[in-house]
Image (cartoon, rainbow, N blue to C red; front, side):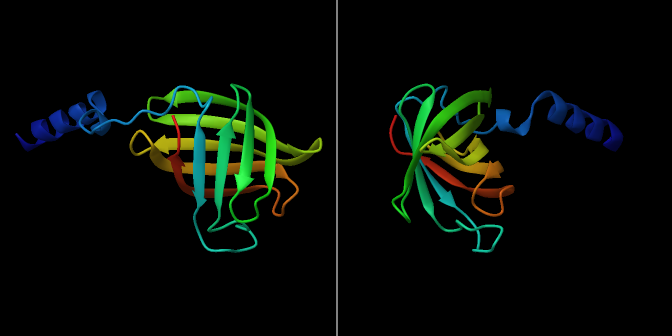
Length: 145
């Protein structure tokens, strides 16, 4: 009987993932016209030079964004691509430029907790700020719809 119950519970987990029973959030299908604030988590180290900062991304069009640091006030812009990987997961790929100089090339993976907030993973593959290849995590907030 116990083995049958274990097999049945295993079958339920495979066939009906736990998030089916949860209140599902949805990641935006488009970022055009939205503003997203990122809170960069962690302690400052040489591998995490922007820990504790806030950044805002404003999505001007379906292909262009502007980034602004609340800490420095500095702004950058660049092209981006966005795709929804699952109802609760989105991928942003961008290259931030300043006067045609590459500042940072990175991906952000968004995982929603509700329809306006969630967690993200930042993965930089190229940039001028050391270390040029790094990862970070944080919280995001969608400020406008």
